[in-house]
Image (cartoon, rainbow, N blue to C red):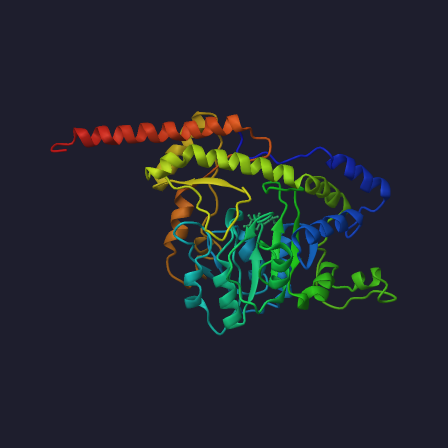
Length: 409
Ligand SMILES: *Cc1c(COP(=O)(O)O)cnc(C)c1O
């Protein structure tokens, strides 16, 4: 059986963990944590990065920093992982779920403005599959309505928004663009949240990172990260002793987790190159089916680059997806569905005030993820794609036979 996912292991994880243990610095914000944070700041130009114990925790930190109060409204897609919403629900927010685009599961930026009310506090785009949302439109809405933008970039490592239109109101965008010529996901908007869960491109079991783009949030972010204390000021020698100054929690991962993550970051390019090669192979092999309208493949908008976080197909119906998944299982291939509509979940169903979200509903029913992980081989992708083609070949041979058999056809 080809598994759906196998967490990437690079090989130096245990050596770096041994180094962390030998150094005695195993708690948070030690040498490996700082190395990882500086790696992201140097490579992508983020104003400031803080490692967290998960992507969920990065989102929770962001919701605290955004000062979300009970009754504040937060707009986000319904087609996302529960943590996107949970972080804001914990602050008492009302979640306003928006529909996905027709062609990809990202938030449909053209439908967001109609959802904005005087109580709206933040927009939370999710860069699904590492594909950038239409950040030009989203940031323009944020500027116009004075909203915060917190990007769920859990899938977004090493992916960019290349669109030209971003409002010049946000100075960190100008700085990033001047330095890199394009904007890395997580760097657009006021705050960005990454995940290093074992299912993500780069992983440390459980882990995440908050990018603080708007410098207004820098100091408070460190305080919230350090359990509501000004311990970071103390480390820098700015205060003689540290004390409790705000709310917060233990959001920092241990040095052992950071050591594991460092081994992965050193190999980031190698991991990414491999994933992109596998993704391209899937795309090339399945494109003829998409051209004939049998299924839909991921579509990259002109303003997005591909970080190969995910390869999926969108079937014509839920029934067809179930049959394809069965067919693949018989061919020794594990595939995966995911995301229930959050607006229609057991927890939120009665609280959802908006209407039906048809594009979200279609992706929930019809999207099927195919295996994509570092150790997968090109030859396996060829086999998986052949199995998908056989399924559609048989299915359409059958329906055209039926059509031919129909009286008068
Ligand atoms: C993985 C994921 C998260 C949460 O990350 P964890 O590290 O598992 O807490 C949040 N949002 C999305 C879209 C994700 O895929």
